[in-house]
Amino acid sequence: MADVSGTELSEEKEAEIELKKRQKRPWDDLHKSGKIGITPELPETLGFYDISAVRREQRERPADPSLTRFISAELTRGYFLEHNEAKYTERRERVYTCMRIPKELEKLMIFGFFLCVDAFLYVFTLLPLRVLLAMLRLLTLPCCGFRARTCPYCRRSSGSRLLQPAQVCDVLKGLIMVLCFSMMHYVDYSMMYHLIRGQSVIKLYIIYNMLEVADRLFSSFGQDILDALYWTATEPKERKRDSIGVIPHFLMAVFYVFLHAILIMVQASTLNVAFNSHNKSLLTIMMSNNFVEIKGSVFKKFEKNNLFQMSNSDIKERFTSYVLLLIVCLRNMEQFSWNPDHLWVLFPDVFMVVTSEVAVDVIKHAFITKFNDITADVYSEYRASLAFDLVSSRQKNACTDYSDSVARRMGFIPLPLAVLLIRVVMTSVKVQGALSYTCVFLFYLGLVTLKVLNSIVLLGKSCVYVKRANMEDKLFEGPTSTPSSSGKTPSKADQARCPTPSGEPNMEQEPVTPCSPPPPPPSSVTTQPTPRSDLFPPPSTEPAPDAPAARPPTPPPDPDQPAPSLSTEEEGGAQGASELKHRTPKKDLLEIDRFTICGNRID
Image (tube, rainbow, N blue to C red):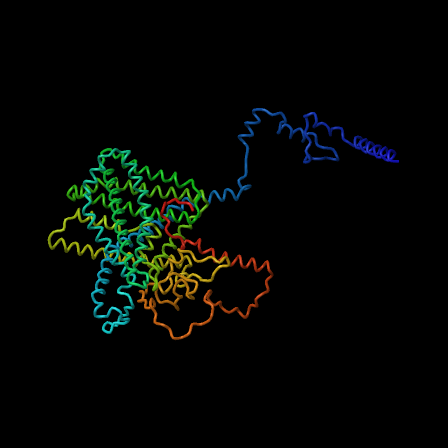
């Protein structure tokens, strides 16, 4: 039976194939010979295909390949860019971003430059006045009583400290500057200049590169030394003998500032030798060193935080280079008896150095943003972060001084640079007679005026930038103290950034937030801090509440919105989201500290 059925099926298939061959038109197989090509779009008339149309199309599109046909196809071939619209739109946006980088970068650079100017002028103008006020307070303490909380005569709250923490830091800065300035008198600038001038060009180029690396390392470690000194001198102490630990920290800080000032002096001497060389070869080589920096930075992966590090480092380097150029001009003008004509001789070299610095920064940032798909709007975020530091340092209960905050953010420490500049100015300018001292006093008043005006303008601009970035709420609220589900303790950076109101590190047993509680609608961000009398509070007679102090009280739920019941998976997702919410601020630009160990460091 199976054989019979298979035979019948094969006969049926053969019959179908034979029927198709009978119904097939005679010219259906003409395309197999290569003479005529049939296409489904051929015109059909009364059931027959138009053979003339087929032949006409065949003449227009010959089947045989030839060189003429290939060249014709290459000359007339077309394509459509809209088929890949997303790709070309992205390329166009990259070009627009590169064109916007110089403008946005220079806005950030100018704002950061004036921040450095403000911190640098503070050392010359307001710091001496603050030291005098602290000394005046020490002199007037006998009339107020050493341990009195309120002076019976001047009605001032003195607490249990001889000086407030900010005044102690100011006195320490003043003593460091005085000691380092007296030690710098034993360093001969002229001998150092001639010693460097006697070296070969290649050796000087290597020395200058080593000095740049050493300057970054000194700036990184130096701020740690100064912070350790300030905290050791101001932390609450139970015994008086604990204050002896300030002495080694103070000596270490003086030694650091002195060495860093000598390092900058060698840099200035090397740059001065390059300016005074006859063929300017050393100056050209030193300028080419800036372009080598492009090679070391452009072809690396950068995130937004890493680019912020490099931007702060570039701001600090640009300001330091300008101060070095000022020192070089002062030394050269002194050698030529302050002849104004020699200033025009120095101007082309100064302009060339400044132009190369700006060009290298623009090229470097433009290609870094291009290769890492970073928009130009990120520089507005960087500027808002710097502005937030300035505004927060003017609050009532600020955690740190503004000059220290700039030093931590940019790696710019003004003390060594200020000591060197005072040493060079005192050597270059001779002050004799009453008229000269009057001019010096007027110059000091001009510096104070410039400092005040610069601070006012910067504070106004900073408030605008903070408001534009919607960061106003962060000014008057401390970071949440609710522990995350992972049980991690706050980082040291967070504890150092916002100490507790009692001046001690954050402890889990204390029911206080890391920063002071947000005051009710503040009147101004520039309110001066009040004397802190809570360092040694009087014993309380009321019993302590039994409520747990591990986490702050949670706000009551909204009665209008009933709490939905969550399953186990949803609770796990909500817990992970809460942990992510608490972990996210650690990557915020405001939490990044000390970026300039190396300008292109990758975490």
